[in-house]
Image 1 (tube, rainbow, N blue to C red):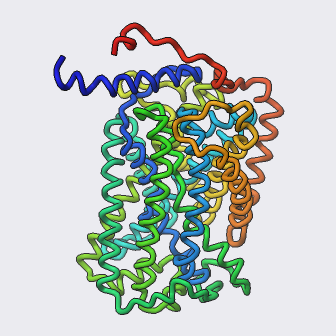
Image 2: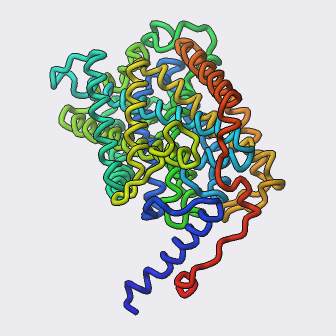
Image 3: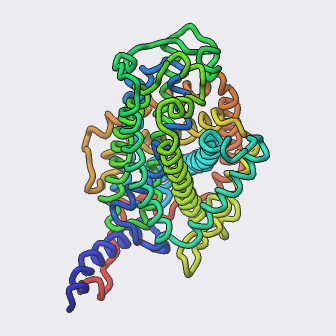
Length: 508
């Protein structure tokens, strides 16, 4: 046996174990299992993308309470996301399946809860794809609009979003190998551009006033470019500033959605979830601290609203270097959307595989050559485009995204609180033990708080959108789906025996 054959044996054994666990949960291996640990981390890290949400939503922080939104608000918001990540990692290690959140909700709480979780997660992923690509358009206009003589309008935004989303879907169409290579590149690109941005800001800053990082100033109303309505409550503004880190540190469920394409999923998926949140939180904080220190005038910066990033870099960083930084950030934002298409298409595929969607027969099909869910990729890309045409306002898209995503993150974790040690007895190798219930309780508090923050003015439209969706889903479930939808093939995988090894697997 050659050296390469010997090296392949451990990986083959691990892949066989992954496939046996998948069979125990009632599914067969259809997607191509090629992703290694770094790739699983990179796809979540790429969707979180501190160079996307951390920049495009920066006005939500600076125009609320100023520098304290970064020095104090950012780490608090990131800790909230880390709570959700801890709970998700525990469940993902036990049940590593595509569309993980939906499957977890079904196994831990029943098919009705799984069905609701699936729809919440799908809506959240579709809207976050829209938010990312609308944000990328805004960044392009802010960075290169004058140089390219672009006149921003709803029509130009719509054309841009259609084109960029179609390209992202096309890359996903041609297989996980190409997508993985690009998301791996995205991981390195985010690290590199962030480091270059931090050094540029600190080197060219006129001064370094650290007190900005804990100074609370009311920049609501016109003082903050009307990002937030006039308010006399610093506490209320502080809560609103948390939307910046909470929105930015989302998308880490992508590691779970690509479980069936990841080797050694029980170990690598939890690492991908936790690692992507931890590193994004740390690097994002360092980047934004450098930004706050580099601002020439805090009052003028806050008054510029969502233009704060460009106004600061235009005033501080030299032109040629600034253009390079803008180009790197724009590339990272494109790859962020690319990774999001991967995540939402796998969620769609998993839900359709169990008959949970209209036209499930088409949406669950996997291309025989590329081994990708082609119909799911293009359908979700189209729906995301339609959503941005209906709701073109970036802040409303962000609020709806945050609400739907964190509701879908929280539901299976809270269901796990009640199932832990009862119906859920078989844990994976990544296990925090009884501490899980403490995490789940804190997740419930965080989920309610995020919902209340997300519906505050000027994002009042987020409330009727959310309530309307919940009412429609309730009517559909009780009127139709409760009788029709059967859920995953095995709602009790802990009780199922592990499939026997095939003869050729046993010899490995």
